[in-house]
Image 1 (cartoon, rainbow, N blue to C red):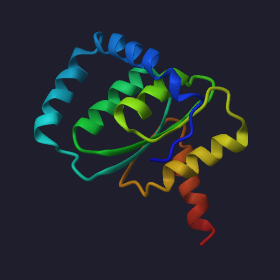
Image 2 (cartoon, rainbow, N blue to C red):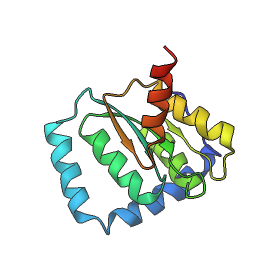
Image 3 (cartoon, one colour):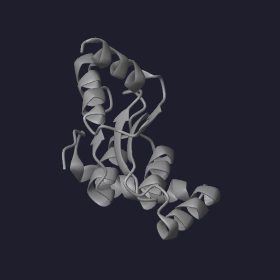
Amino acid sequence: MDYDIKDINLAGKGRLRIEWAGMSMPVLRGIQERFEKEKPLNGVRVSACLHVTTETAGLVKTLKAGGAEVVVCASNPLSTQDDVAASLVADDEVPVFAIKGEDHQTYYAHILSALKHRPHLTMDDGADLVGALHFIALQK
């Protein structure tokens, strides 16, 4: 699995924080339980350019429980929680491309990594994935 995060050794701390945040999201937990049984997203590729936080991790885990193949990149490098990114990679086998404070070049390389997933669906906080798709299409 390809990914680019700060430090995989932060996963333990991230796991605990994701679990703690999940206790405040009972509706999402209920959806996740339903998705685990029904697999309504089986085979759907999703690229998500979102704030990489504990709350987003709950969403990503829910999509994956539903059968989706999810890749995550940061929509805002300043909001990235490196321990959460590490947990998604280590514990949930989700390719994550996000490092808190990443530079401009790395940020756009991460967006391209998410697009290499060839998503059926995008989740995009800031329209950077969609913008990159348009630029790629215009170059062809």
